[in-house]
Structures are given as structure tokens and as C-alpha cells.
Length: 330
Ligand SMILES: [Mn+2]
Image (cartoon, rainbow, N blue to C red; front, side, top):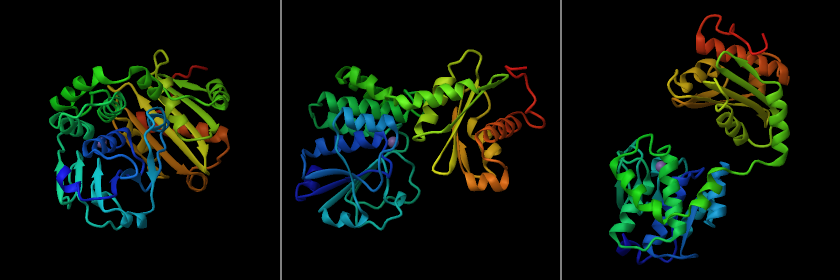
């Protein structure tokens, strides 16, 4: 790989559109492996980083991620791609020099050099192996990023982690900065968001083991997911359903304790007919345009939205007249 890239003046290390920690850490690791400093290699994406944890990662570890235009790709001599494959992009791309990824191949990956290992839980694990093989001394910053990449992609080694991921994790753990880690994992909540939370919690509905909180208008969508995580900690709660509105859409995040019905199935059944809905076993989300909600469901005042979400969700969760349950307020 080093030999291949040695001839290039400017290298682009490409990540997916909303780069996640695994992509960002892998890109930083590849740049280190190739021995490049700015401006010779840049970490680029066509999109932006949206999740607060991921923004915190780049801010706290001072990792430069540049948003680039598709036509700017031609300005680089060589292109590497990490945690993604050329077919994941809608944009027309020139020949890719290197792909390192752990996603299954949708179509055969076309690149001059390629290392795709679908069995791995994280691309960061693959890059950690390269760095160790090449005897590169890891900085605390890079070790922290890679450890976070593995943790984020494997849900703390609980999802899809292999022996290789665990070995990389054990290698990186003593090298990482754990106080930086904590600051990244628990992103700051803006002061104004507390008012939305306080009001939402005041209007909460707890029906049996399902906690519903409608926040009303929110500043950014990740708040909804953050609060859904938190509210699952309430005693006796097995499901948390948090909703809010922004950009003329209603956003909804669902979390559960993991040993109940798959959250993705319930959310798809409850809201799939009016908007985008789906997810995994223990987390799911839905996004519905208010315009579509009005024409298919009804009133979009906050009270009406909150009530319709309760009814639809419980019906999907329980079937039939599932909306009838023991309400905290009964
Ligand atoms: Mn990944």
C-alpha cells in the first residue's frame, strides 16, 4: 500500500456521507499508516457529520474532516476509501486506488487494492492490524479514535464483534485517553434543550411499561434519540418512545430493553404507512413529513401528535385494541 501511494502528491481518503466514528478513525489510521500529513492527504466526505458524539470525536481529538464536492475528487492523484465501497455512492467516481471495508459486498468492489472483510465488526479493527503489522507507534489520539470506532460499530463489543475485534480492542484500550473518551460519549446537551425535556417529561404518558414523551419543536434531531436513551432508565420502563418536530417533520426515536419485540418491526408497523420507519432489535426511528401526517393521520398540533403516536404505537406493539392499557394517570 505504501509503495502504491508513494507516487501520489495529494491523496483523498474518502468516507461515507455522514461519517461515523469507525470511518473517521479508519481514515485517520490510514493517513498515519501512509505517513502523510496535511495537505498531502485529506479525510473527505460529500456529506457532513451530524451525530453529536461524532462531532465531539472530531472536535475533542482535533481530527480535520473536510466536506468536498464530487467534482473536487478530480483534484487528487489517488483515492482511498475506508468503511465504504464505491457502489455506496451515487456520484460518479474515478478509479479508486484502495478500499478497506467490513461491509458485505453489494457488487464486486472495483479498486486497484482492496481488503474487504465482512466478518469483522469494524473497519477500525482492520486498520489496527495494519498499524501493528507495520510497527507504527500509535499516538494516544489515534488509539482513542480507533477504540471508539470499534466500540461504536460493535455496540461495546456486543454486536457482530469477532475475536479480531476483541484483540484490537484489548491492544488499544491501554493506549487510549479515557477522559477524552467520556467527553465524546456523553455529548453536551444545550441549555435550551432542558426546557423542551422538562415540558415533555411533564406531559409524559406511561402506559404499562411504555414511556411516551413528546418534546414538541426541537433544535436538532439527535436530542430525540438522546432522550429516548435516557428515559429507558426509568424504573419499570421496557420501551421509551420520544418524539419531536423539526423541519416540518415529526421525528420519533424508540428504545427497548432488548429482550422484547424488535423495535424496528414495531416502528415499521406503526408508522411505515406514513413515512420512513425502521431500525434494529433495541433501537428504531421514524420520520414523517407533517404534510403526510395531516393527510393520512390528522391534526398535527403537539397534543394531537402525542395522542396519535401513543395509539398507533401501542396498536402495533400489542395488536387489536392494544391502546388500552394501565395508564400511569388512571
Ligand atoms: Mn464500520
